[in-house]
Image 1 (cartoon, one colour):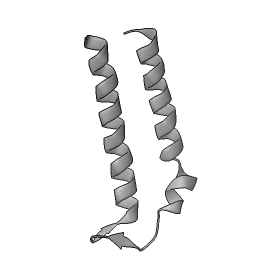
Image 2 (cartoon, rainbow, N blue to C red):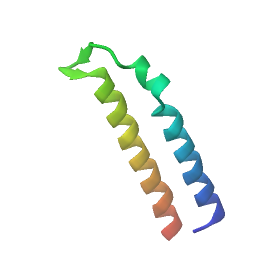
Image 3 (cartoon, rainbow, N blue to C red):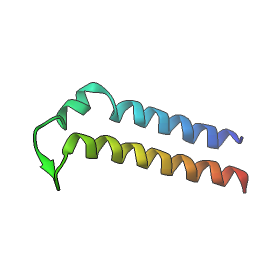
Image 4 (cartoon, rainbow, N blue to C red):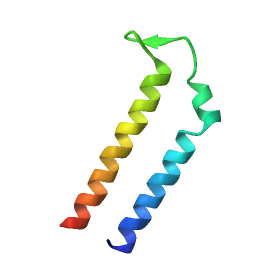
Length: 64
C-alpha cells in the first residue's frame, strides 16, 4: 500500500476517534427522534457508514 493511502486511512481513524468520542456522543444523546429512530442511532450509524464508504474508496484506489 502506498504511503499516501496509509496516511488517508490514519486520518480517517483519527476522524472516527474524534466523532465517536464520549463528549461528542453526549451531544446527540436525547429523547428526540427522527421518523421514529432516536437521533443518537442516526448519528452513530451515519458516521459508521460514512467511514466504511471512505475506506472503500481509499482501498479501491490502491488496487487500480
